[in-house]
Length: 218
Image 1 (tube, one colour):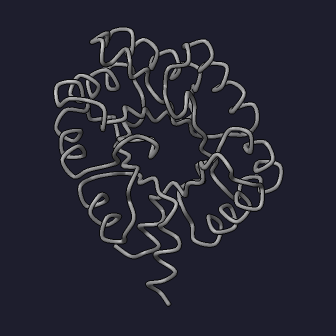
Image 2 (cartoon, rainbow, N blue to C red):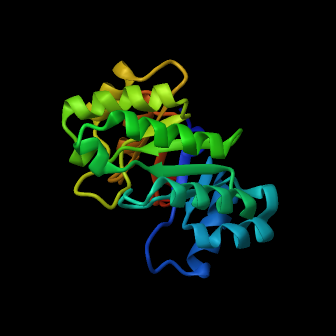
């Protein structure tokens, strides 16, 4: 796979609390130049990106981020505002407390509700694997599948750990045929990027891919 093909699977990410418009504009310029799958940005920048870049960049934003414990109605409101502002893809964080309580029906219903709010737009479900047991991860594969989400995603990048080979392999074993995988968190080398794509990830979330490919090309 060429670098260009790999970058076409990257959600080029800038979610730091102190990100400025200069940071976001640089991210978008890189996304246009290198053909990344999307830019993944804080919700407050979505409208300005859409007004500035139009359809030159595919805009992804986050909901219930990074802790996931907002009530469902608040997450729905976030989705609706993001779509109104010009967003095309939503990465939501599940209520991790509900997962740890074993209340998987409630988690599944929240995902289903947000997918309904997204409509034709892509919904990726962040389950934050670093906090979960193997059994909880398997249960979340089923919940994401049953709720009709488009992707299951490993991590926010703000937890105690990020994507791992073992978690992606587990996802591949237990998700339904219509669910894709996104690895995120700790993807810091080209070898990481190649590994996760090779394991079957349709998307990889990272802030580093463009810089790494630029260095390699240089």
